Image (cartoon, rainbow, N blue to C red):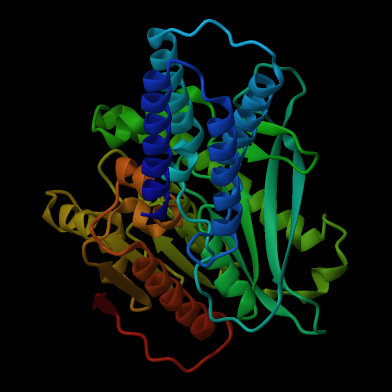
Length: 425
């Protein structure tokens, strides 16, 4: 709201200056100079108030004002006026307004940089690493001897001579490792070590430990979009899911192996309690976490954030009939749940819930798929385009963060919690 009012005010000032110039028949460099200077000071004062949360998105407006000030300074010191025409002044005003809208666009797209509230009391530190899997060639490149690199980021409590359970997170299709930052902070602040995986080329972009950026693979993104839009035939979908799960589960197991070996050579490694490990993920990352909960004895608890457990498929039309062996907390967006219970064929998530007495299920009313990430809080417009519900973004995030903490506390720390098997909130 503040940003919208500010931009409207800037545009109104530009129009006033235009009409004044047209009336006097000359470029009002002096008036424009002091106007832009006033706008710059207004921005500086506004950034010091609690009305806005300063972020890099504001830099565009600062540059706009400073550039306009310098331009008008040049006009003031020049001895003679450049030829004045009404059409030139109108074009200049239009260009200025367009530029203003362009530089302020990031503020509309990402209006909030305010951290979400967390309940932890411990100071949280973070560190990033990139591991090279010498046993695998990179599937997404054509270079010879190009081994797959997997980047991870850890969040952990400041060292206190204690050990903490480990939770490994896997992001959704063309998400990235920061997609659920508030959840990592909530867990780490309450005594967990959290490791978030960037699935290289499945991630929207990956920042490696050396600063190199790797963008997502276009073919994969296109396939994922087609699946979302139901444009893939059943047989092809099954093959795609197998391919995706093969890449992601190998990433997961590789990262887990690196942590067990302390490949990071980190002094804080002693904080990790490798006897108590949780797996968690959003969307396709939830499927990855669920696969790990079934296929490795190292995983003691699983959280799936609105993900279809595609790793449970054993054939084109068959699901794994064995009881799921690990405590699991499965979150549903409301529309996802309604689709799951109405489809004609068995749905993996519901089959697991029916057969596993330690399966817990939460449906959050009015939520959409992207409500189970931090994106709706930071960019409501972008998240809405990708799929959110009408629920308040902060309420949804803090609600499922509290439930995740409660679940992991119960199964990884031995807290004596009473967790309802099914919840509709």
